[in-house]
Image (cartoon, rainbow, N blue to C red; front, top):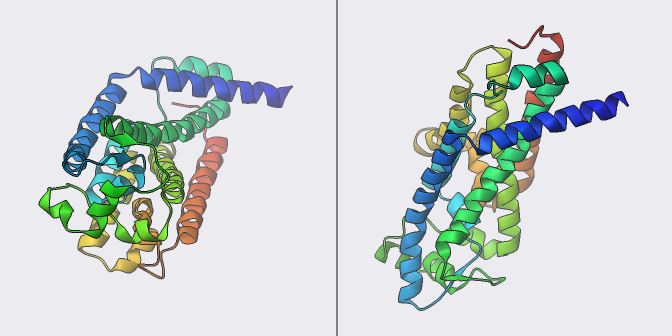
Length: 281
């Protein structure tokens, strides 16, 4: 009975935080900014599709997430969205008091896991929405994306993102999309846990700096450091083309192992600190 009561309390905290977060003005602003940004990215693609009289396949998500700038912006917005985790809103003392300190923290963690998936799902949904009315349902990459990937048409039509020919030639669109979505979800959750751990364990609001460190590490390696450092850059793993044989030290197995181990370390740190910390203020 005690375990069932704890699970119910954790789920209530998660549900409350989810409903609260979805109604916050910051969430609406971030989603609006992401919507406008992705619209600007897809618009030239729609123009090109109209020029060659072809549709746009539903597999644009792994392609956009594979772009250096696009993935950077998506994850920067995410860090801003959850920068004050764990969330101490006006009702958190009531829920923390009723559920207990541990259940409140575990509910917040469950919320971050679910909200991370929702955020990545929303990004994918916006891409599909912006592709209308050119959107076509097909199990192939499609002529529009294929032409841009294997010719110089992208530069001629000012397509604002790169198309990874290596990924498109080595993976089916279904495999690439599923793998990209899972990795992006784990990356978002890792960024959220990094922010959560710093804010909670150090009693500060500077956790977002650590979260942004992971995001900027990808750009830093690209511009300054040796490529071997990509092994330790989670945001890099969102780029499926980096995991398809270009570098022997970067594989899907390594990405999954690194993300899983880092997530477990952060969760263990949070669990241990929650047990020894007195109070919730």
